[in-house]
Image (tube, rainbow, N blue to C red; front, side, top):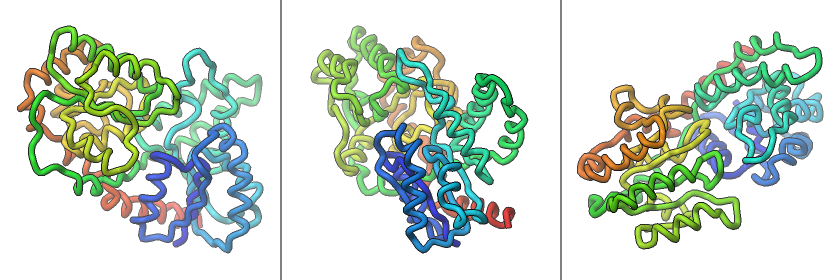
Length: 366
């Protein structure tokens, strides 16, 4: 069958997800996308542009698959009557009800309401993790209660009934070509490959490193990930005092460099305040990095039960203790792998599951 995938914010993990599914699906996946910038404008105007593009093409999809950055109600209104009998599914990479606003700002409820109205217009909702689904539905009553009357709280149960978890596929096999032939040696290398943003809580990461440095613990760091700020002060300050311990600093401009950095690292740390899925952590684990992760958010979902006590921490002091232990036990860290636990996210395994789930949705709506 033909699926039209609607992505008004095509960059980073959004773009990788769309490209990965299109490349591995047995269905014909037609991607209608806009560049990933100006996110607020994309949530307002992206539907107008994509509806126009949809009507200009000779498309006869069995299903519309939209992401959370699309105002689905506007798209469907502008693309009728072509879309009148086509079911739409909404995939939540993130949501604007619970994504933490920048420090010193207040959440604009309008964008959360776009997510809510889009969900009402969809035949099925797919979330990229259980944590994400539960957090969305925990927050939705509070969003609706902000409004003065006709809160429509009874719609929440109907939305939950058609909400499912559909974890993203990841292009993991491409890392294999960059796997080094020789084992890691020397001081342990600690990896940061998250976005350089407030919700990833870099201040706590650097505070933990500073504690280790004050104790004269031997370690090196790879600081990768993308920055959307011209002067990310906490990163620049840390680079100065870390000095020669920094093996890499800055965004990896090509995939080969990024893959090499992950294979060169021994352990990956997350101090995130918020994480809907954690693609960077999945990629690092696949490259045999030992993960040190907070015991919250999405992380417990993909860490096997028998290793959670070793991998997950609670609180800053526990983070420092875990890092201290790792530096003192480099052989144990380098011998540890959770690669099999995350290999299930490879598109080769996930795409057939997507295909069946979406085919079943189309059958159910006929």
